[in-house]
Length: 291
Ligand code: SAM
Image (cartoon, rainbow, N blue to C red; front, side, top):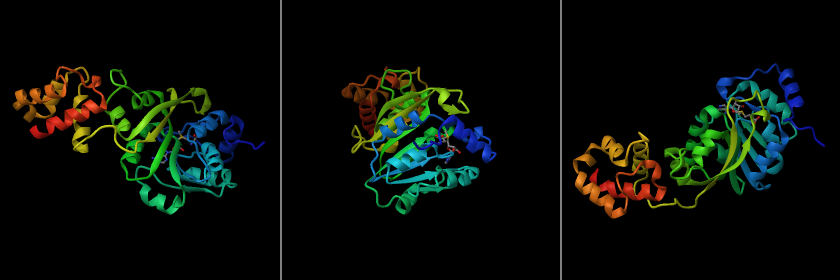
């Protein structure tokens, strides 16, 4: 049986051989449990015709599993010191291309055309650097890139927000942004003990499946996300309070706006956290004429 990178001993040996020291500022918590890695990869339903984008390969723990399950892997690694290590640990896998880039700065669309051109579908599979989980996901979800599935590890608290339903504490503008583009489900929870160094927080893997169509009809997407954010600006306040502060012109037309909302069956005395995505869409569409 092949010796996996992600065993505690092999990881320690690789790190020692290269004199590697972890940078907390880059979210470097490496996985040292092959079973967890296999579970992550299983969630992505990869085949040899799949292309995978990995963000942050580290020393290649997840990458080697991806290389075996998929046709091609494109991995973004920001830390220059990891490149010579990856050259060695992934030497047997000629279907992996590691680029030395900050994924937040990268032109992902262009990179896909170069490196994942002839695959049937593309998945993002990654143990994300936790300090930039949300910017990375929002960048990829709103970029015009053909990614059908995301299987991503993040801090449990963020995973709860991504998958939250209306009426729960974790539900907010991030839940709505992610669920507008994808169907989000919590796939696995992962203990701290499978990382080196151990993070301070619990972790979870979320699976996001891109929707063919948004779950609701929105006339102006930019305004929709703006209204959602405004509605959660102060969680304990009502929609009326939050909307009136964000849009003074609505307050000036109080009677007409309240009437329009009543016709939609949305009471302005409710709090943002009680509205479904579809209700936020109706709310936005009906305040639009007053802005
Ligand atoms: N995949 C490895 C594993 O599971 O063991 C490492 C995961 S570690 C949580 C996150 C990785 O992302 C690190 O290798 C780190 O250097 C890299 N990283 C951090 N910020 C990045 C960024 N903006 N763009 C690309 N890679 C980044």
